[in-house]
Length: 149
Image (cartoon, rainbow, N blue to C red; front, side, top):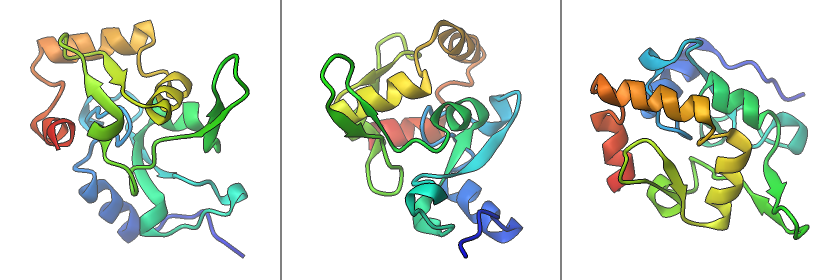
């Protein structure tokens, strides 16, 4: 039987690898109200395992929005597109920060599906990043490294 339990050592590894950033929206854990969680990129119900190569660090909002989903239908087309996979994909291949420094712009269909379902650019999330930007907290240096590659 596969366990969904992520032990303390594995959680420390995942958070350190992510530099305490949400691997989806790049928000730093210190700047979230609910903190970050370890996400099964491919959920257990879809055959994902509790292993380093299937775990990502995700803020509460991204993790709850994603849930156990691994893909989404492109609106109006019926085409199924997988989500961004932090262990297999590079952030900068699928997203970029707009000139305003707060809007996350999808560059691919994978980026579009992920941004839409995880709600990257919902009004409250943009406002949150705008406030953090005014405080010099978004994007952090660690986030810039991911954005720039």
